[in-house]
Length: 297
Image (cartoon, rainbow, N blue to C red; front, top):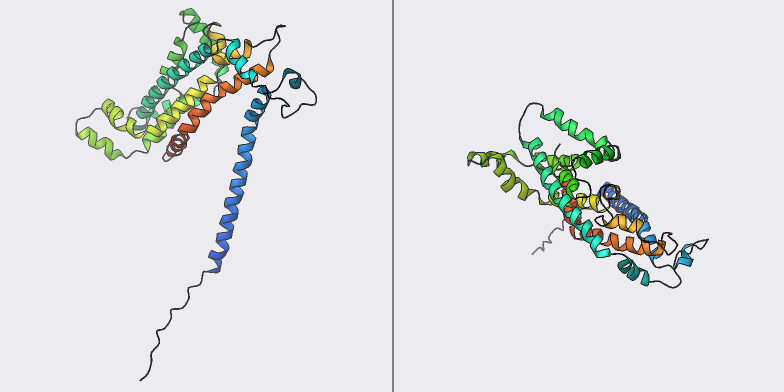
């Protein structure tokens, strides 16, 4: 009686090219993470310096050479920043203007982007190029003519300029929405038209719910634009109605009328915190909106 032994399958060897490719990919990933970490440190540096400046004494602020770390952190600078001026009132002005402008410019830009992406009309492409070309025009060039125009109609020292700017849409956001809406399959639009929907209903009930990442991206971008703006509030608003950015730059002074730099740094740190909180909560949708808007040109 003969015994038969089961033949063992031959071992599958990894091709040499695959073995070389894995370490190479790991090395590329490690280099990418190192570059990203270096960039993160670089971009976080100004904010860290601002926080350290807010914790210094006035003597440490003017010391040469400067000390990076404060010897005795002055947490009272933050308390003084909140109490020396009507901080909450100016904060409310900034939040109100930023929210109103961000809401209006997001909706108006979405409507214009939808029109460029899905509607048909003669001269649509040249008009879209004209809209994009306005992004090359520096805003500072149009600020004085805009001020003269609003002054003649009596809208200076009011919040109406931000309402008008919001209703006028933003060329960059129009481009963002146009790219996103152009990537949506035409079958959804055709099915809605067969069911008797007009383009207004298609925009509100189909396209807007699908564009939540881009809507949030547009809102965050436009909110930070207004929140960080200094020139327009300083030019258009009275000191009592101005925003927090103007108040921080002009109202923190010592008894001799000189800028109180450490208290300004503390106020600026508090001024940055709301935007950081908004971005931390919205960063996932923010990145998704930026990526998805470039799927189709």
